[in-house]
Figure 1 (tube, rainbow, N blue to C red):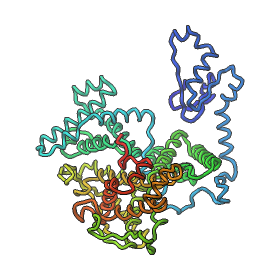
Figure 2 (figure 1 turned 90 degrees about the horizontal axis):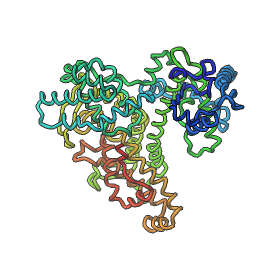
Figure 3 (figure 1 turned 180 degrees about the vertical axis):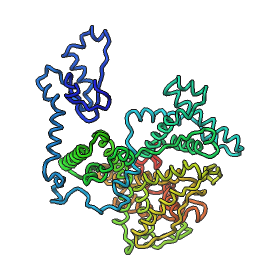
Figure 4 (figure 1 turned 90 degrees about the vertical axis):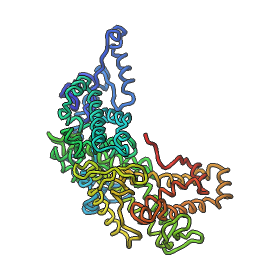
Length: 581
């Protein structure tokens, strides 16, 4: 058997049994006892059936030395290397990634097409590295520890004296740290309990918490309660009152694609002109099977070329593969979260116009009517909704950078928080200078895109509306959850209308037809979800940056009172909040 991570080839002994192909270096060891030997399972005909069953769901092929095609399979890795070398040296490959429907237009992205802030190299600074199998095991441990602990319940009780609170924080933090060590190594946990030698495990603690934080950034829909407890625990662990007692910091930098490549002198990977093709997400949309297959093949060739071009003694092909697919994960996240916003923007621009008012579908609102806190003409409301959606899209597009800024603010050792009753219970109110500056940059960029800005430009952060950057991140990860069900309802409406005669009768008699129903839903949303409602006063809601999202949430809470609510239920609507697990 070769070492873990070693690429299996004929030269290092993998010809002695079935050759395992691929850069992952997967080695499989099967241990058998005497009963298996006595039962005759080591007979080649029986063993082959057993191994074939084990590998039936994988991409691997079982071949025995007596098989006719055995040598061909064994030689496959050498043949693959030779083919890759020929592909690398083949003239004109740089211009071969083309789409038949696009003529001679290359798939590579021309220089200067994207702004510097949105280039792959710049985004890679904030794209977390995909977790390995070993890291996923550690993730499950941290997630289990956070699930069963009640840290925030104990330390954030109102009315606690500072000294008592610091004692509760230290007790809760050290209990979690001891539990993590004990779960991995019982003897080490016993020693830690006796000697309190926490600094000896500083690297271990940082790695464990970094893995959980990285997983959360990559998957915002996961760990929705566990992450809050985790980040508040780390916030206390680095605070000026607790850190001197711990004598070490549990906070470590997030492992990003840029950092990983920089440590291995591989930043040139991010500047390759085929990086866009190699990391794109293949979306089905309305493409034919042949088109999808061609895009997949083009992507695989781009990945293979980049791996072959940049691999070195410091940077293996598997390392490059990991980085490319981590960037692809980021693209997948952006597509899935931006698509609902883009579709709602399309609904607005295709069904309404700022200079035209269809009869009965004016978007104008007046303060005091139906809970509205703003007064806008049809044109002004159209642009107010469009600009709000555009802002949300840019925020989601830059979410990974914002998340890193938010964690930097939350886990700051100099900017502390205070416990305050914000009207929504006791909250940790903390200033967020880095997140606030990043939001100002995004807002300024959006304002330059539009002709004129409608409404206030106030960004609430570090006050009773948005107590800290965790609340800020949580608010804007909800945008796809708000818009997604609306898009699903409108897209499925035509399908259920044509499929069921009873629904046809209901829609035609009760809602005036399919087109009218669709436009009624959009008209109500673009008026009531952007009317400044949802708070007790104008300052908390209104037209400010935070208030726009507050109004949208308020519309969601009122959906059961809308006349078209049964249509949402018929199209599969179950709620806006998603699953907490």
